[in-house]
Image 1 (tube, rainbow, N blue to C red):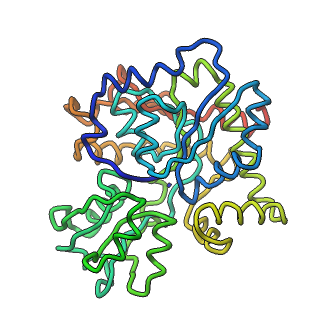
Image 2: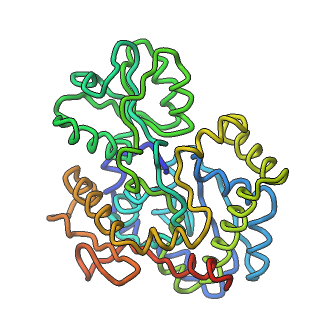
Length: 360
């Protein structure tokens, strides 16, 4: 949650036409058999690293006669920027970032796998004397600006009858958040796990708000370029097949499952118990049928309306966006929020349904 970040508005809006053109190029070559997926460290995304390291990705890629490179990118937003500029065919990201980076840049993208939503994985932490959310007023807050962290903060402020004008935001990379918290001058941060878990282990840390207060709104997804999906569905099938094989392994409650979870924990910088605590606040859709139900639900439309409203208000839908309807968002039933002639983000449950029906 999902996802997560070093972003400036300028980076999201820079050279939209150039970025869009570049992103189309990878799918142009006929008969491709090699594809690339980018991912970054996050509790709900560790299974991708495990699947790549333990032959699961390779197995499914071989089934469809292709090869897939799975690359870990240390900076979350950089991974999305690289996807947007054409370096990758697919990338892991949140629903908001899918809208405000590739979609806003004109890159038509599809949410192929809805893997989980943050259910406490993202939080607001005060250091020292602050013990309630109201105590955040007037403070400098370290945060990955224009990310899901800022969305979480904005929702919390609304619920407590405050606004961002009551704070000073300090843009901080996700990779630097733990170090930033340790600085003597820092009094408040907004971040996600595993960084959040590390920070909360400090005796002076108090979590005053988290994403369990807005369940289902911060969604973690595997996103694929729509033109790649249309031309090379075998790539999508391989990704979906590998993902749900890994989900089945994780939930088997046997020695193999524990070994897999332990491996994921180590890769994310914690131990088995620590990773379990992260998963406890991640609403994983271990079964494809659960992911399909969530993706097909009318509630997703409402959630994405919240997200696009926030995004437009913060200038994240592109320099030329004159209204919240600038970017079209399409849902599995065909419903569209925004401009139907400019659909750039699509939710597609077809391949998850194939997994649920055993048709991969």
